[in-house]
Length: 316
Image 1 (cartoon, helix red, strand yellow):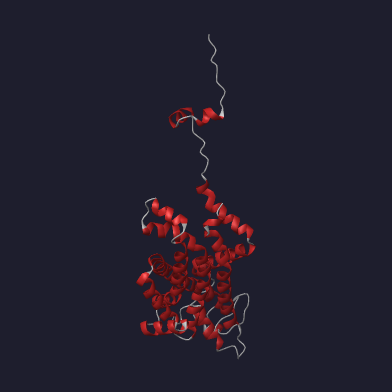
Image 2: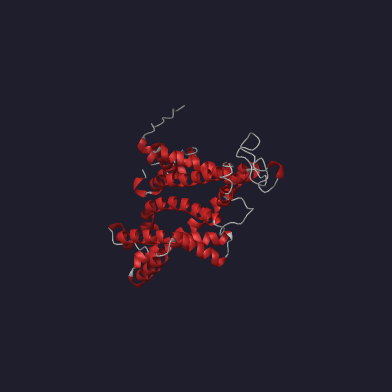
């Protein structure tokens, strides 16, 4: 009986093994590529390196949970009135007290989170998309398109932005959709000008020319090579605008041009509570105002972290 001699397995033999032979030898151990886990590892690294960003994301998670689950976990119906419990101070039964018609303030605040975040995120997303498209076209091709866009943006920014939002909502009607459109219009010039400047700086750089020589079209170069490098400063602007959008929606509701009562909304609650501060019912305005401040503060803190997460130059 002849003995079978097994050749030692070396790195070279493993490297030269074909996929067909690897399948016959058994299941191959495929290591994850850097692109599969690189983005997640980069996000974790940014959060660990910046405790402020980690705190901001924790606060954002709290707001999202309140927005998603708030209507289902609140202890009371935010619209149900109870005259017997009107103007009750904070207690174990009503954590933030009750308003002048007996509605639970905590329940109304929690439910209002969904509406205010929806208005803010929708308005900023709309202004981000429209402003990025207009700014990218103007910055890349220039010429008369650039001149017309600049005059248009100058016209919008010549108005006090909140006054312009008031005029738009007053003309179109104080619905949630019109509040979103008005907020998007007053925020759009910030993105258009920022993208125009970033694209104008990078359109003649070496990597852009290399992309063109590789056969990429102008739209592809703009979308996949130039625009990602403009995202870091835009993320800072996004975080600021999210807070401004919430303040804008609350301000419109405060003066009677926003969401209509009895819909739970932070601006309405502050406006209704302001009438009772003098008589001592401080909780009606303090708690909604505090909730509003926490939301704006959270979005302001997110800016640096979002910038580091999307910056392609900081990815390892």
